[in-house]
Length: 285
Image (tube, helix red, strand yellow):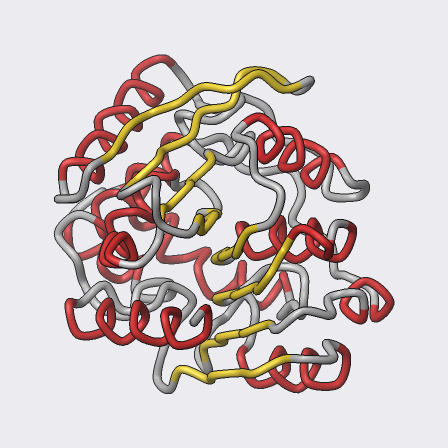
């Protein structure tokens, strides 16, 4: 997963830094799966309804928790670290071409003793979440997806070309100016943690050899519980307008939101965090 030992150690420090941003009660748990030992963060009051949350590519459970921790006022958050995409996760990427991620996730869910639950996923986490739900719909009460992978996909070449020159400039000269020019394709606003973190993650993680595959119409049609899909209109990876058009045509019971003037990573501001938490609480009920 990482280019060297130093890179892994730096990512471990970043994980702890994002965990330190949280103010809720948090515990760690490790469960055994056939894919390896899986790490999970548990946040909030365990007597509240469970909400399982899946993070984005090359981040981790702590990174996501730092943005949605106010959900602990209503839910008990369960945040697994996705294999191959977190310093705390199983150190190997699973295949996107089969049900490996769904099988891993089912083993994690079984290990923590959940039978029915609400599910949330962002970006790569949205891919894992909706693929799992299509297979095990009886386990998921409601599903919320934010800029999910696997629904639509922009031109890979266009995305690479957009970031190629800023990436080369940053690698040659990792200045704050070059970092901001690079991350502006992903971040909606500059953040003193998220900006430098993304710069380090692009240097530390080995480049993924594959990206999540697109789900078939048949897969999306199997998502028959209430579903919320939130897209971003300036997302260069998973364009929001085509995404919303597709889910409306294929997912039977879906409601949607299109974030205006928003890139792939939604704003990391207090205002947006409040909006997101309120929107999810209204949806999950």
